[in-house]
Image (cartoon, rainbow, N blue to C red; front, side):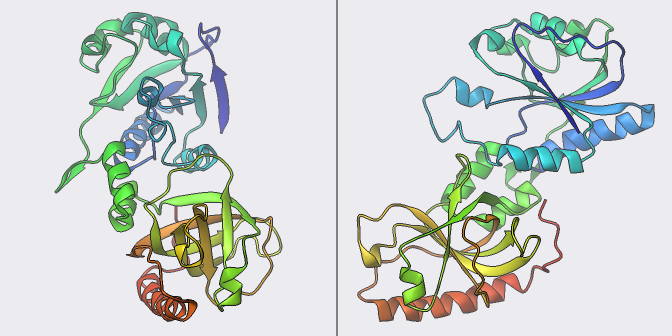
Length: 324
């Protein structure tokens, strides 16, 4: 898959029309986003064209608000690119989103970008907008701006019993700790990516050694608590292996209320040294809230039960499951 970085003003101009172009930020690549990409892929295959994606370096919505959480993507960039390649995307047009770019009129957006990227067909979701003047920058107006230079295909709403599948809804569920609902809407297991670092060794001292994950970039996290997880070792001698486990997000207040928030994963039946190795943690299900226990013995008893509960949940998910 090829990634072409675009700036404002755009200096790129394709020599021929060879793409079906899907456009959007695709935060999280959830089922609604996949419906858009899969429709674009079907059109591309039918017309013997390549599949391209027009997307952004950061959230357009997050760019305009003072909300640091909204600026953090649901899925890390590298994982997003890997998933897009698996979905059959041939080329990514990655726009450096800034104020000048976002201030374009919808007509200028089409003239300066869509019409110059070699698109024979442009595909987007029903609620996608582009450029400024949002009331005139919707999919209903796009055929007018295209003016015969490319076809336009609009994908309808993707919803379930509870309503529209959206990144906003997924974020809300994530912060509530409802990983089962999150994973259902994503179509894959929510994941965090990072490296194993040294911790304070408390888990090892009480018989539950942990791999502490330091995130490689800013990533969203579920609410504090204990979760059933599956962890994939990405680098080192065990690269490619996955292990069941349970993970804690929180301050570990049983051993001090001033501790920083950490991600600590207890891998079941595992004793190897994976310090400095990259790992991906797949978050399967919420087990319980963080609790400050009276002593280490009470915590150990609870951790034993957490392990039992985790194994009950994880046995329903085969290790061969494709998480992306």
